[in-house]
Amino acid sequence: MKISVKILQGAECCVEIVGADSVEHLKELVKVQLNISPSDQRLLHKGKTLQEGTLIQEYNLREGDKLHLVVKKDSTPPATVVPSSGCIETQTEPSARSLVEQEMQRLLKPHYNSDSEVRKVVSAFVKIVDKKLVTLSLDDIERICDTWNKENILRF
Image (cartoon, rainbow, N blue to C red; front, side, top):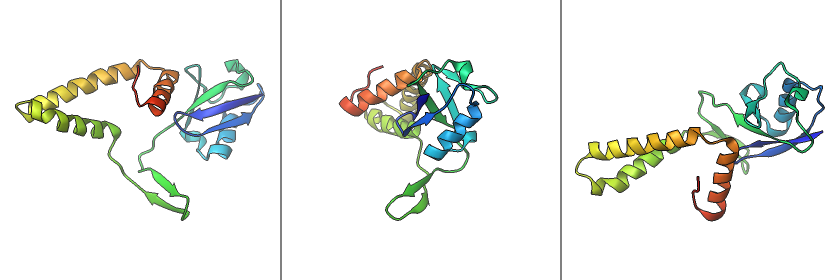
């Protein structure tokens, strides 16, 4: 059966598997197509992680199903391939979270009396967003990102 494996807001591939295949075999097929080490892959089907040491048939996958691939982060800075030159550059960028916090502080600073008040407001906002995000499924996140890409609107 053919199933698709998709990285959230990233690459997607199709792989041919049978129920008797192991999760390890599936990860090897994904490695061949997406060049992601099996040890860095976390495959999800309907919110459940496919565990190593199990067979595909245990997850009741059907023809055309979609698996979500979460790529585990490592401790080294990300490497970006520059296609035109074929060189690899190492880049370290500030996290999206810190960029949002900095921008919020910049925007709110004129409206508050002290930097500590601004930091408290930004911190409270970030905590609320964190609580909201942990309740979202990968499908929810993908839907939100698609809406943002198409309409530049965030809808939760």
